[in-house]
Amino acid sequence: MTTALDTRRCSANTRTAGRHVTQRRTILARIVWIIVVATFLLFFVVPIAWILLAPTRSDGDIVRGAPLAFGSWHGLGAAWDHVYAFQSHAILTWIKNSAIYSFAALAITLATSIPAGYALAMTRFRLRKLLLTLTLMVMLMPAATLVLPLYLEMDAVGLTGSIWSVILPFSFFPFGVYLTYTYYAATVSDDLLEAARIDGANEWVVFHAIALPLAKPVIALVAFFNFVQNWNSFFLPYVMLPSSDQYPAQVGLGNLLTSSPLFNSASGISDIYRPEIALAALITTVPVLVVFLFAQRALVTGMTAGATKG
Image 1 (cartoon, rainbow, N blue to C red):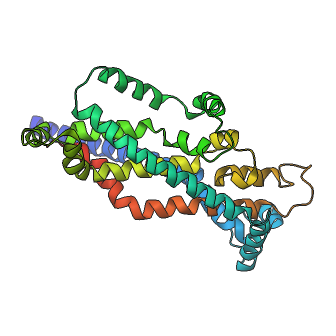
Image 2: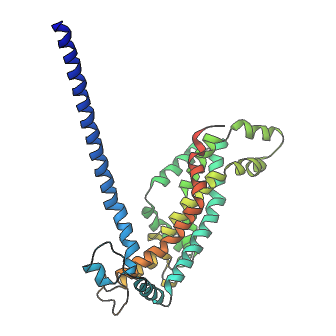
Image 3: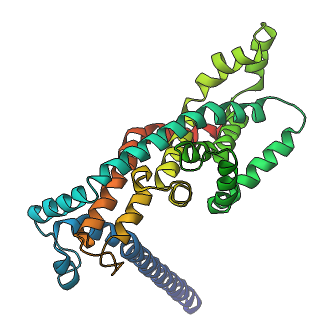
């Protein structure tokens, strides 16, 4: 009898200890989760909230007031007037230039990356593995390392200072080639294309009539990534273009910063302060946000399209 009671007590104690361990683990997991979320809010959400609210306030209020507070619509209007008046409406010119460079390069990228990725994935030819290896190597290289050789190349053919000195390098998009390669290699059946070849279709017909329509998800994916990269590029257009009226939006923002007394005491009289800089940054971000909102369904489809073969 005593032995049975002792056994039940030991079993109850074991269960109690197990519950305590589980509770401690749960509490520890919640603490870690709270720390992770708090870190995310601190480093990502707070700066976004600040830049959204800063254009509504005066520069003095930003410095001395609460960091996250709404100012007034009048303050937002004043910041816009100062940004719009800067260098005779230069902000509109910069956005127009970014649109020209980004969309022109995007058209060339799609016309070259999709066929190149298809050829690497679905055909067999000499030096195929070498080309694929080179594509991967260039894709992994930092973009800044290619700026100097690209500048020397454009200078050799007399294109520096023209829009082509930006559009053509933007069109060189090995990541798009690799995305297309992985999509076709993982998704499109070789038997499907071979059946079309047996029926007498040449490679152009096979690609245009069969492979290209199947690639709509990856085309959207390549287009989005290329557009975002082109729009956000700073260093290459900064090196290639000599004058402010040719600058894209990101280089224009740099010009705006150097014209502000906050960052350049020798800039003279300027109405460009923290609210204006924050507003200009938001304005130049809007096109990418709009493209993302319209393309998000295609992006999700493109990212999951290569999950199965067939």
